[in-house]
Length: 429
Ligand code: UDX
Ligand code: UDX
Image (cartoon, rainbow, N blue to C red; front, side, top):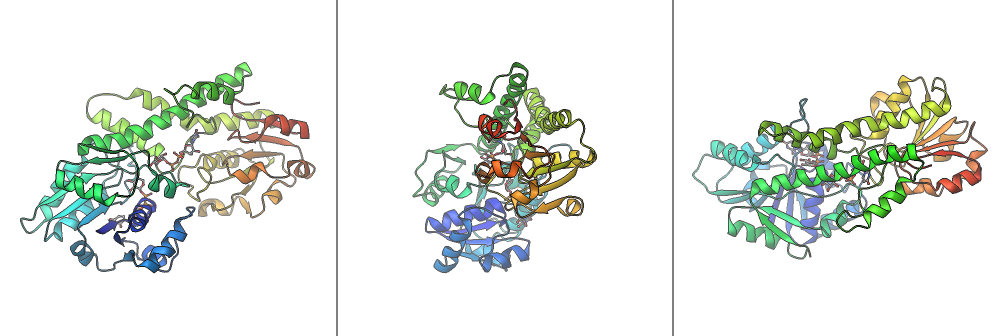
């Protein structure tokens, strides 16, 4: 099948490579010519394990290609996936400007029947809006269908999530178009759920908001654990073994970040408000998450008797491990607070880079060990597995004072103490 992907971002690229792997002919287009140029040369603009290998493979098989002539791209492909970003407006609502541009572009170039699939995360009811945008701009009386097919890809494991999804959700009102999508996903072994486009759109926001709720909930319990001297990991394990709750997304820490959870929680709150109902539970989830980096900083401040002129080694910059994405990273919020408190910061991350506005103020080291030399304290902000295998006994002698604040509860508290560290996690001592 010939598939067009509009928006060669993180989601569009992964989706395109998945379909190429399933044997389809995929064309990618993007308004950003540099991205396309780099990808044509086998270079991805983001770090995602396994994806570069797949890109190289399908540049060779010819299953993936890039089209500069966007009009021809619409003409040549039967199924069109819209994967443009839907960033957050100031008021928390989803910004659909890119989606509108893509829809109008499709509309003005529609000369025969197409299946248009919205992959971008959009509020319930948006597929109707997309239909109207296309209707208004199309010149000929050509039929088309608009379907919703949300993605559930996690950065860092996008390829695995794409190849082995828990489910494929399709919102469709046309059986023929549904069958085409079923054919497109042939080879993927997972439940294929068909529902209305609006329900499909709401499923995506509800899933992300529920996962965010689990995280904020366990972070609140972690604060109680700090007071009661209980290990939150023991609580999470005991609770998570209940199959009705499940063990995942119960890791307490410095809060959730990334390009999805923070914006999707706010967008769902906005949808509820616009429809005359309220989702105050999510407002609380959001507030708890906003305050979680402060909770961490307070611990550090208390233990070090203030932060002014203290040398702090921050391990990890990305919003989670296995990605170089720093969007809404709690680590960045922590670095900004440390700067405000007058601390001297050295930072390490294996792949993520400091944003330009911080590059002059914060020193980024290539070596994790270098980062910690003469430090008054180490703050672990991203759960890179490598931080577990550092020779902490050797590092201890190079630090000014052996204090570790583990914002991801990833080290073994007992072991760290036996080496001689003062160690504090979140709800974990
Ligand atoms: C995706 C989804 O699309 C978003 O709705 C979801 O909530 C998060 O994941 P992502 O792939 O991370 O977004 O976005 P981004 O990396 O910004 O990629 C979007 C791409 O679309 C960019 O490469 C951008 O240049 C391109 N684009 C944008 C177009 O090609 N046309 C446009 O009109 C606008
Ligand atoms: C998320 C969804 O999981 C995915 O299905 C959706 O399509 C896009 O948004 P992603 O943002 O890539 O994926 O990362 P995810 O693994 O969900 O983690 C989000 C944030 O939550 C990270 O900052 C992570 O560190 C944090 N987290 C996750 C916790 O703090 N505790 C946990 O137990 C799990």
